[in-house]
Image 1: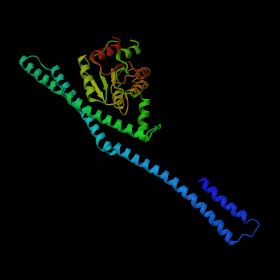
Image 2: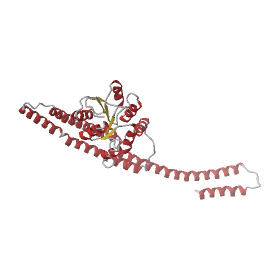
Image 3: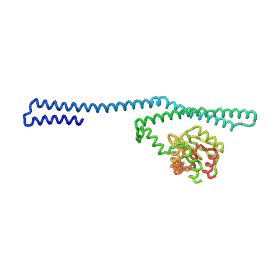
Image 4: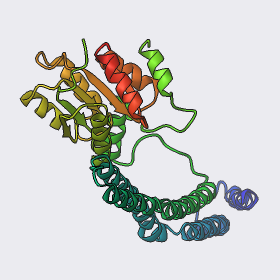
Length: 213
Length: 127
């Protein structure tokens, strides 16, 4: 592009020099205009090629991004998988709560039972022990539900990981919205750390040490 | 100060099941008068209407946490001497230290058993 521009500039300079000292005619002006137009043509041709190449690269990038966004399956996650995982967890909470209440009701009934009639007492104990066994079956189903949630989380992790790599994502600090910011501030101020995993929490004996007992 | 088994106890937790567990454990160790509240603000209201011998509170509740309840209780001239035990899954050292600074009498980490609950109540009342 630089060579072409230089050649056209030289042509114009040579022409202007050849006409030095003479009165410029209309034909001279037209010739110079024609040389300038040739120069612009060459420039715009080279511009077109560069722009085209760059636009093609942008189009290729957009196509790749479209594919990656498609692979992310955001609608499937948002409308199907995440709500389903939430429902599974709700069901786990309900099942454990129901089981706990059933077991506690039986325990309360046994604690308050009269032992005057041995046969009746034995029947009552058998009945409530059976109820406790039955209630404990929640563990199998909740285990399966939690496994489904873990599978969904792994799927999200894989997709987010792939997408972040594809777009070369860099995290920015801050919160998505005001509600998220408020919750984080509340948790920080009120020390809402939640239950800790084994090894990250202190046990009762360490708590007692802090109280000097 | 000996433990008075007839004293009313206020149990504060947003999980009904947990309240039921604590109520049963308290019954097993000899306390029959147990009231309940679902968060700190409800507890504060009940404490202003009735004198409790002991408050057993969870930490993480909405809208008012057990930590906020503790600070409110200690700042209130009429309530500040009420014994207060925190029973919580918050098991980071910073939580225990903050609760101690705020004036908690004892701290129990969930899950816990009847023996732990009894020993902490005994310790609060100097038994």
